[in-house]
Amino acid sequence: MRADRLRHGGETERVAEAILEDLFTEVLDWSKGDIEYQVEFADIVVSKNLAKYLIVEVKRPGTLWIGRQRLHDALDQARRYASEQKVSTIAASDGSLLYAADVEHGNLKDRVLVDLACRDAPPGLWWLSMHGIYRRCEDLVCWPQAEDRSLNDPVNTANGNLLHPKYKLPASCFAYVGDAGNPSTWKLPYREANGNIDGKRLPKAIQALLSNYRGAKVGGIPEKDIRSVLIVLARAASAEGRMPPRAAEAAPTYCELARVLEQQGVPVQEFSAYSR
Image (tube, rainbow, N blue to C red):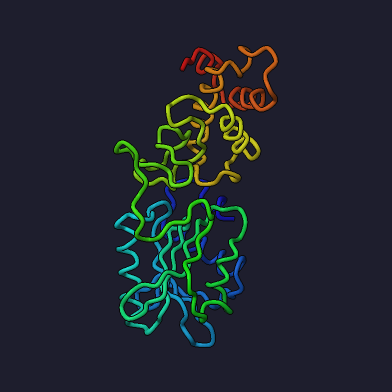
C-alpha cells in the first residue's frame, strides 16, 4: 500500500499522512475514527475515548533522515503541540522514517525508530499500538536491526562522502538516487565501494524492478524514472558481458531486461556498447 501511494514521485505531505493512517489502522489496532487531522495545528493526533495518546508531525515523503536538522525541527514542532494539548508522546514521519519518543522532564526519551519501507511489520511497532502506547518503553526499538541507530548518531561518511547506513556505500553505487543528501532515497545498489560492478547485487537489482515493473517491490522509485534506472542496470550488465545479444546464452534475468527495454523503445545500441 505504501509503495503504491509513492509510485508517482514528488508526493505531498498528504500522501505521507495517508501512509501513516494505513499504518495505524491496517498494521496496528487503531480505528480510522481514532486518527484526527489538524487538531490545533498538529498534523495527526491519535486518540481513544477522548484521551490523546500521540501527536505526529508529518513531512513530505523523502525529507526526513536521522542526523538531519529537518527531523529535529519536526520534533520541535510536535513538542510544542504536545505541550499545548498535554500529550506526552510525540512522533515525526515522512512516510518512510518514523521516529517516536516520550517527553519526560523536557527531554525526549526514545520509543520507536522504524524504516517503513521494510516488507514485514516490525514487532517494535507494538509500542505505538492501543495496548502499547500508554506503557513505558525502556529501550529504543529500531527496525530493521541492520540500521539500528540513535537519533543523535552521526551520519556515516567516508572520505567526505555520505554513505548509506545499511550498505555502507556512496550514492554513486546505486541505480537510483532521489536526493544525494538523503540516503533513504537511494535504491538498488549495484556497484562495489571501489566502483566495480557487483556481480551478486546487479541481478537482484534488476529482479527487484522486473518482478513488478511498476516498482512496487522495491518502492520509492517514481514511475517516470524506472525507464532510466533499467537503462543504467542494462549498461552495467552489458559491461559485464551478460546482456543479449552480446551474451549468446544470457540468463533469464538479463533476457527479460532486454525484452522490457525493447518494449520501451530503447535500442540495443544505447547500452550494448557501454564499457566500464
